[in-house]
Amino acid sequence: MSEAQTQTPAQIPVTVLTGYLGSGKTTLLNRILSESHGKRYAVIVNEFGEIGIDNDLIVESDEEIYEMNNGCVCCTVRGDLIRVVEGLMRRPGRFDAIVVETTGLADPAPVAQTFFMDEDVRSKTKLDAVVALVDAKHLPLRLKDSKEAEDQIAFADVVVLNKTDLVTPEELAAVEATVRAINPAAKIHRTERSGVELAEVLDRGAFDLSRALDNDPHFLEAHDDHHDHDGHDHHDHASAIHDVGVKSVSLRGGEMDPKKFFPWIEKITQMEGPNILRLKGIIAIKDDPDRYVLQGVHMIIEGDHQRPWKDGEKHESRLVFIGRDLDAERLRKSFEACQAA
Image (tube, rainbow, N blue to C red; front, top):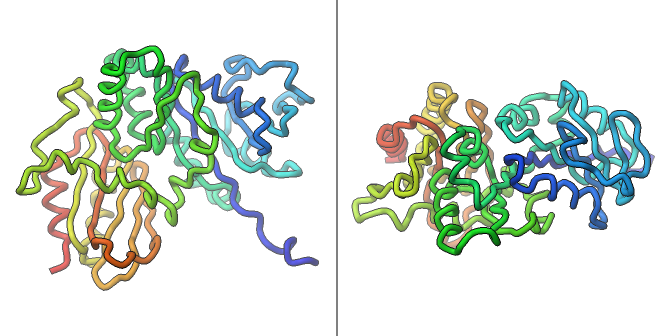
C-alpha cells in the first residue's frame, strides 16, 4: 500500500452561511454552484426551491442530491444535518469544502455546535467559519424587529455587507459601525450582488486555532480608539446607533497566571454560557513561549497553542466576549485578577 493511502483524509472545511432572505445568500449559493472555480463544493440547503437552482446546470440528481456541471453538489437537510454530512462523506471524490446554509431565521449556534460536538462528524470535517450576509439597506430595520439578525452578526467570523450600492456612503458607514458594535472580531467585506471572492468566505480557517486571528490586526486593535488614559472604555459606540441587545466586551491585560486564568475562563463559560454567543482571544501565558488562542460558542470552548510569540511582539492578552447581559465591569476585574504577579 502506498503511503498516500494510509494517511487519513484531511478534515473537510465547513462554512456555515447565515443571513436573512433577501440578503443575497441565494445569489452567493448559485455562484458557488455554477461558477467555474475549479473546486468541488457541497452545498447543504434547507429547500431547493429557495435557492432556485438553474436546471441547465444540473447534471444528474437523485431525490436528495443534485450534481452540478462544475463538479459541485447541492443537497437538502431533511431532518438531520449529521446524517446529510455523513452521506456526503461517503461519496467518491470527496469535496474541497462544505457550505451549510441556515434558513433566514435560524440561530447558527446549533449548526456550528454540530461540527464542534459530534465526534463522528468532527473526525471528518472541521468548522471553518461562520459567514453572515447582511443587507446594508435593510439591516437597521432587521435589527429593530428581530433578535436573530443580531445573533447572526454576533456569531459571524466573516460579515459580507451586501447591496452596498443601494445606500449612501454615510448610511454604509453607520451600518458598518453597527456591525462592529455587535461584533468587533469579525472580518467585514463590502459587496454588491454578493460579489465577494469565494476565497474570502470559504476556507478562511477562522475556526482553525492555529490560524485563528493570526492575520487579523483589527481584532488586536479592537476598541483601542475608545480608551482614555486609565484604560477604561467609557465610550459605548453601540448606543449611539441603536440600542443593541448584543454587546461585545473587549478585555486586555498582560501575561496570565495559568493556575488562575484557566479555572476562571472555565467558570465564566459555565456560568454565563447561554449569554455568551461567541468568545475569541489570544492569551499570553507566563513562562510560555507560545501564543494561546481561545475560541468559543456558548459553553463550548476550545483553546490551543498557536505559534511562538515573534521577536518584539508585545506579550499581551486580549479577549473578546460577544453576548447579551454581560457584566463588563465584573468580567474586566476578574480577568485582570488572573494576571501573573
